[in-house]
Length: 414
Image: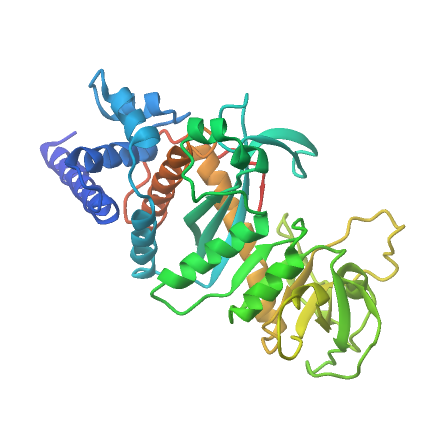
């Protein structure tokens, strides 16, 4: 290596160090003590540079030679009482200053755990694994940008057994105001939080609600907040036909029947089903027939006053694909953006796949699956720093470090 090359490498390294220091100071400058801000930077640097598993011990060993660094870093993450809210809000502002969010996407992460010490751990059926697993369940809100999907906020499902047991609450340092909430309540809390803190125009919410029993109620609450949304709904969701969308998108008639979303999507209610041009997972183009219709959702009207809302429901049409055909049903989507062109809606439908890819990267490269998470604050501290590291890596000009571990699959839906 020539002297000129060595000088260039040193300048690049110093520039990267300065950029990370500035980024850390912006997100964690609210921390009251200098040592807390220093450990935040150590943790971020460890997440960005440590290959393989990212336990606290390995992160500390990768970036410092101090024999007590591991203990201090563990204290900072799991026991130090710092507020993660300001860092998440500053991360949101940092991203919005650089990029436009085309959608707010909800990602669901099933985090397998051994034993019963991790906060919120419980047994639940994981559809991706096809079996019941011991796990934590987290919900993340992702900003869908051009070419990237970045998490900015998280919620942890706290089962009733954890919420009601004083001993478990003390052990996991769960604050008194934290209680058990249903998944749909956690999703709504994420959306309310970003709505209150965004500096940009609200983006539409895109989410898979197909496994949430309270999907109908959540749809109604989003509508009453004036929030645009496009969500995948359970095939069993009760709907009533409000009108048939003709080839120009307007009402062509009224049906009185009440049915399910899955049946409605199979009925063939448009005169000319929309022929979309999509690309399959293998890169092969295909042209599915999209069935679209206007519906009302009885479960979304609970406790609401005023006129009943009308939504557009659409799905891929499969003639003759009845419930006894044995063929797996396609997703059924529901939106309150009734005036949008179908091409625009189909572009939004693809956004959850970007968040699913981000979840895989978080699992393989940023320690999503490596943190034990015994305390409630510790879980949120780790998720905050992990999200910050992912955003910095994905959106800054910093070059990817060699020796990165390949992404691994995380059981999730988005």
